Length: 149
Image (tube, rainbow, N blue to C red; front, top):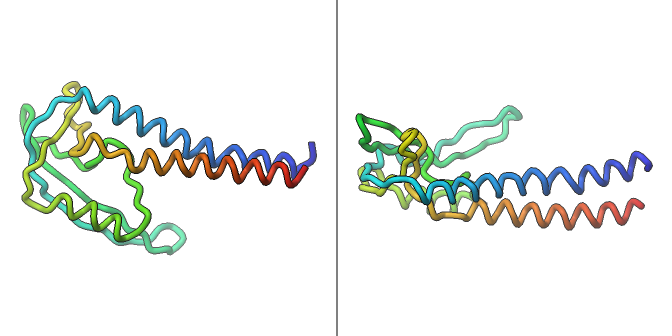
């Protein structure tokens, strides 16, 4: 095989594997969280943090923190059972508005490790997005492989 064909196969494989594995890991965590225990908690931090990545590009991140009691105080910082993935500032803002500071929420936690917790164990938006990206990159990669042959 020529170097160009190998490069095309690499392109066709890496993206789908990356996003597909993220989707599968997210789905496994959502399924696992369905078995977790529930207690009441309170949102303590809610907002959007802005910063810069290593390349100097501006990045934003939803920041949600909450407290709940299980044999003492435990703080959770990941409000979804799956990874957070937003298509833009409007999606991120809508997410943050769901969790205002002081709001009482149901917290789902792993009884064997209460630091593993979430306040929404049913949101699969990021899982679907990762699966769609994996499929789209696989299709694009297949086109590239056919074109370079």
